[in-house]
Length: 494
Image: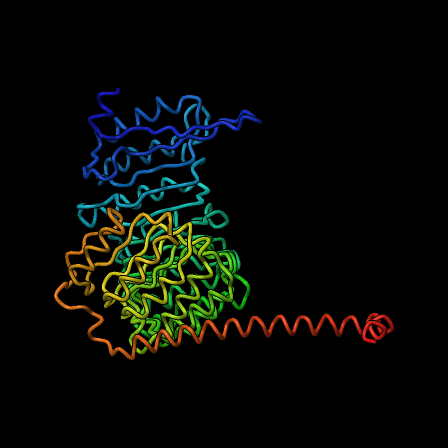
């Protein structure tokens, strides 16, 4: 009944659509209501849920089950599993037609024994499903939990079908990551990992050995487009496994289709060369998050050069927390060149928590000439008046900017007023700003002049190179004319 359904806070969402040319009704989605609301689903509520599903499924099929955001008792899990696997009146089970299973965050507050039972029951309910996408995130699983979900991680029906897998915030230790790697790579040429296009591991505690397991998983993948391996407590040794794994994929021609790459919170300071080599082939990349990766100036230069070589069209770029500017301004110059190359695509850019200083900010701000950028962040970048002036001058070149963050810098009170007047509501609050001292006072006047001179020299060098390229092309065309039409050419020279 509707009353029972509301009491259970669960509803059946129907997402039907028709192909008007063929008049085909698409499958419906079974989902919970208000996933952010925390509640326990017991057997009684599960029965109400199943009753509502049965009513809505008359004459329809489903291909997507969403159970996330609720905590299920073992009895409730059995009720749901029985419904999914039932074959009434000779009809195939609901599970047999399911392709997408969102079973993340379903065991919160359950005792370990019951949690494992719930995971096993729900996982086994999909034993006949040819799943394409699975999300098991936000379940405190451990190795026992991974084994409990073996059916949907390595069952015979998903070997050739599973493409998208998310295991985020699961507390996966190095031992658990090893178990995951075994399940996903067993079977060699016919393993689960081979068909993966999306693989997400985030906010686990895999450490260095877990990174080695991640490398084993992606080594088997043939067409990855979306990779996330971030927040996993990887140190230098483990991070090297990540970058070498990506480099191996690039060299084997299996990284070129990647559009989304999230490698945040790793330590690439000693292995950025491998990362750069991998990025060189990522011409389809649209999203890159490498914040807090210890790249330093040398690393960011290598990364930017690689992205320029790849000629990608980034819409999202986060390079915050990478110690850029610590050793000079070469890093900021490279960032500026990259920005200039993606002005037609960039939507969100974050370079916060770097030592960019005003000269570096000016270099980057001058590179912006974008009608697509909506968000820019320069929090905690040691910016003063000169940098503020450059950002104010940037405004006409970013007409669709919606938000800018400049907190935790060193702008004098009158400069803050000018920034506020210029950006209005687009400027985030600046509660951490130090308005007593201008950050530029910490720089030598010569330092500001030097970077200006360097910028001018770079511009002149670029112009001279362009002229040289034109001259070379003219000479080549002239030589070709002499070789193909020697008589006409000699006649023309007389």
